[in-house]
Image (tube, rainbow, N blue to C red; front, side, top):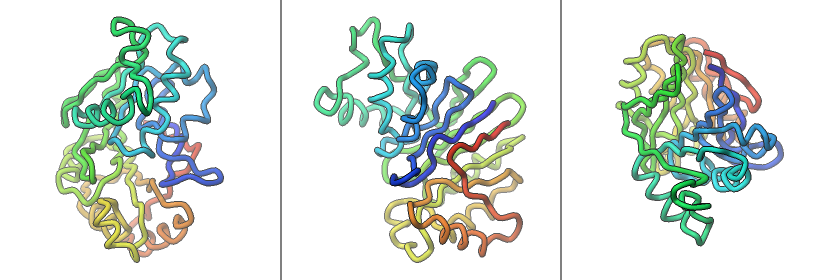
Length: 254
């Protein structure tokens, strides 16, 4: 598999795009503003969208994507998320007030979009590929994802605070090649990171100390204007190879 970074910023402005990763050419992991840079034919090839949680920076492009390609496709786009995240999306986005309910357009027998509820730890098999939701800890119900190509694995944490459950799930994996983990705030904003259930460099260091494998670590969700400072603080706390900042346009293979 390959994973292309369409967006990995904690905000917008200039070239910043919010979180979205394209796995091969048919799977999206989160659907932030970075999806808007894809050409229309590329959007139409997306069959599956795996959502970590319901916050706007991770779901902003779902309504527009489905609206743009619905008539071009023979099958609905499948939105994979936990039952609680699906409930939030139905109630607050696809509610005919913010956006039409594309699970009923053009009709319920032939919708442009369908929801598939996920359970933490239960894999979704897509041909030879597997996507498994892992536990995460955020201000709303949230999951991380493990992508397994059959030859290697990648974990993306989504938005999370320090989570012993997530660390344990990561440590049970074999052949973990890449770990994409968020760090949204600098250490001077430790209190804000705790309240928002995000990581700052000191909390990231604490999590990584407990990860037993040796995946290549990439940092995502850096707040615009703070990236350099956050990465300096991460480097200062690193005992081995320092994690790298994930970059828009980067491709990881596994």
